[in-house]
Image (cartoon, rainbow, N blue to C red; front, side, top):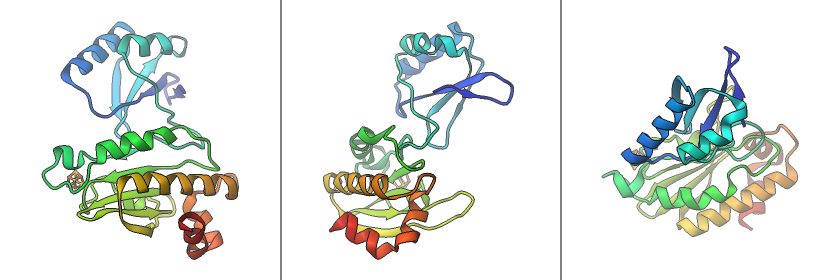
Length: 208
Ligand code: SF4
């Protein structure tokens, strides 16, 4: 889980997005003790700790009281989410509890990487329309986008379902992941897979 950096040092990604000042203090003290010089934040909001001795990652995590997040490879990446209704005055939906539920898929192996984003309202601060799976909170529930991308081949995702309750959204995400895992070719991102079979076929397969 350690990523080699351009300067030959290694970086690891800590899981977790919301911290108390006490958590940050404990983490900072552990990083200092282990000689870490730099922390940056990933696109999925996770703490990327640069300049780590790969042999001492376990010890560092224990001291900092954190877990590592799978940051590379053909897996479900860390779920990106905004504060939602728990903290943001504009939030329609509880993004924090949905993110916690979707966390069970974190690290699941798939034909290619899988980026999931949740926003609490249509302002879409986490850009769900351009993620492999995006969940956008509205007053009536979540709108689910699939197959979006902001990378080399930008694409707005297809709207798979609207007004979805949180538990139902978790069920649908599970079906998407299973269907994609069992049917896509290695290296085929979700959007390319949907294009290859047609959105209607995909929709029928995952929604029945
Ligand atoms: S997407 Fe909406 S709820 Fe989430 S942070 Fe932005 S404005 Fe707030």
